[in-house]
Image 1: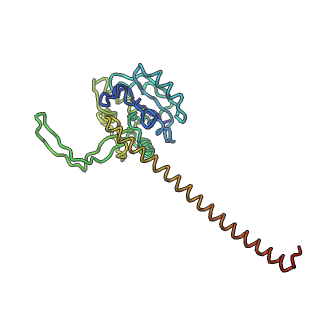
Image 2: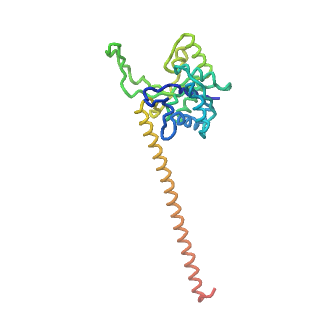
Image 3: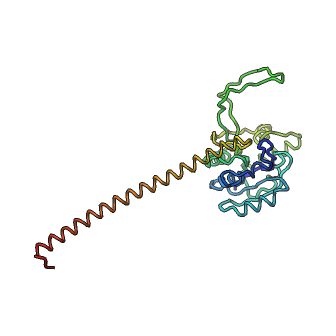
Length: 274
């Protein structure tokens, strides 16, 4: 069984929305709902654990219960840091869960094929993350603002989610982090510090995380283009079907006219007698 934990308890201050950014609407639906619907399209995952602020648990559960097409889910309260929220999500997993994916609730455009690829690699190797090649040159800069070095961009990847792990590996990583008082920036980092290898699965540059209003505009633009593309495809398909039907009708009309003409000729050859 494959379960997905969605940490969504952050305040999203950079969004300047006056509320948790995952509740901001994206073409008529909250970002959180958009993300869950995307994962619900993936046959490789089975259920969800949505982690939100304690004050939002009932509200989110009510919204999701009214959303058709979602896979089974549980909504639980998170903590003051993302790591604590994921820990609460781990505690709420189904007893039969073997693989765990952790995905940012604010990444609604993750392709289904990326989810499937992370799940497949996690089954094979035990730990896998989605990532893309760094497009920009990266500099290592000292505290005084002076460039220290320029890493080879060919070896640099921008890490995304989902990140997938065998359940026992991720739970062990969280126990180690708690014992050491270590607070990481992502789940893969907790697994890496135990010495367990984490595989990279190439993700998508469209798998953006909505953090600022500018991010929201970009994601909306992608979605609007997708909607236009689908409508255009349907219109073209319908147009092709209509043209084909017209051609069929024309062919039938020709055959009917020919048949009527033959009957008229036969009728006339008999002197108008049936």
